[in-house]
Length: 419
Image (cartoon, rainbow, N blue to C red):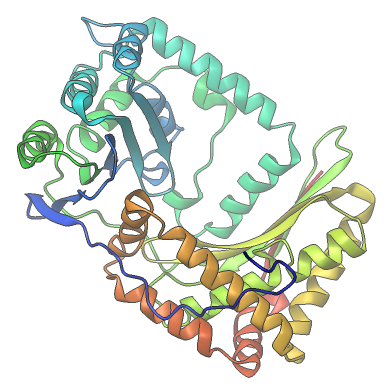
């Protein structure tokens, strides 16, 4: 019987035994990654398109993304979704800075049929007038609602200011984007970035080789002929920005700075710094600003990844009367990391938390595919995670102080408040 009065032995992580996916060439520049060892009949298929927000103006990427399954000349959007639902399938879509993703979840016996429905729906997208009008009406309503939410206003303002040197990365939605329909531009974007914009396929499921070959034939027609090119070398000149929101009783704070991509030699070690600051519930910002001061329900920090760059960001919402006091405490915590050594106890806690999260993130074939994707997209391999384990275990308080001094200088931060 387990003695629950005695703490169990703490075992250190030395290595994660990853299962590497099988890799096939859809074209020389477009891979299909297949993780076969799934202990059940479930399947996930992801289609990655070079159709991110940066690829168009006037919210066209978001509008077209929302219309992907809005109907063909033969099938309405309702009929498309009912056909997939009848087979127990589920569609999910995601749109980010640099990519658009369409995901299919289903049982393996229905993968081929659902994949054909998806392919026909995208190939035959007809931009039905009623569907376009409904999409624009819905997006306009959501946009107007978001304009009253301080967190959304701060997010948009932060993005515009942070990437002000690059028109593609700094573009944000405007009300007028949803007031009129530019059919030629939408169709051009769809043709260039979906029908000729597929740059990666991932498949997790215990299917046969014939099924993989059929998927390559089915979706390979959309493969890009060239490798996507992404922006970099961004510059931020503005340092403070306040965006008023009528009748707001709270203020949103979104502050950060341009940093570096995942390939940078300091990336892994700075993840430790980020975790100490605000990337877990016991972080310094949470302990100070939530637990001690009671200024907010939550505050956090994150390192955001782009292909050729990245940025560090701190996000919170506080009462309007304590906005400046909150900024003062954030600055105090950032500067404390630059001058004081982290205690062995705190570092030990953060180290164990990070290693535990890494191990948890590799639990099962779906998670392993995500982890493989998250390095392969940046030209890295699975050795990245062994290096992460080594660096997290080896980092010292002195190195943390050095990194904080190098990357957390207050005068380098862009500070956006909305409220």
